[in-house]
Length: 242
Image (cartoon, rainbow, N blue to C red; front, side, top):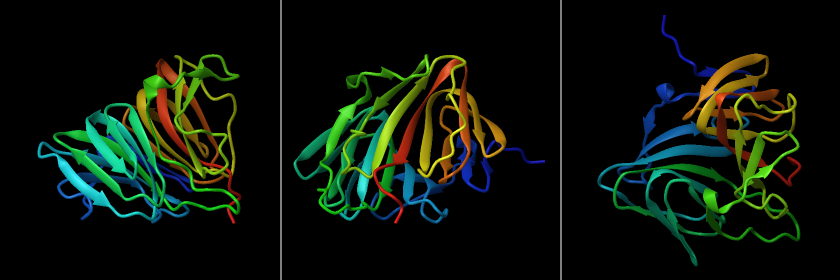
């Protein structure tokens, strides 16, 4: 019998590194892509993709029309969009608004996490501005749950934004304080450690390199393992779904 930790439930999908299937896109010549989720998986409104750049490097231009978030997992790359020029080393990131033409370059191997979605406008609100940064530049704040810290990579209080990116870190044995059921969808990438994720009524062992897509109203809970855990979390915000 073939065994895998990967699983698809009614309202979630767990993809492990052993489940990866390499794809390609004309806009990223020579790069290998692993499509973790796209809008083909209803009701997802995002695409979240691993971009693997080889020894030959990469020079690519991506047309405007989608807002983009890029997170460096390894190696070094560079991005340019309008007035923004940013290095994308390990644990660096950049947000690019939907009206920006994006240029990506790398001189050698690198791996990026690429999130792409159509921006949801709101009357009277401007498009969000481009952002660049690095995880280590952002202070981790402790939540109401001792041992659970979060870094907000994008301003969660800006109503012009239709999504946020948070880096959640858990001390050993610490978990979410409740089983959550809510309207927001999630794209979750395990950046370190391990733990047990409750999805619907199923419990799954998860570890670094795993990805979980959670549809709206998917019951969810988490507890970190003996060495703690960390994950990068996408969540849509400030919109009502209409």
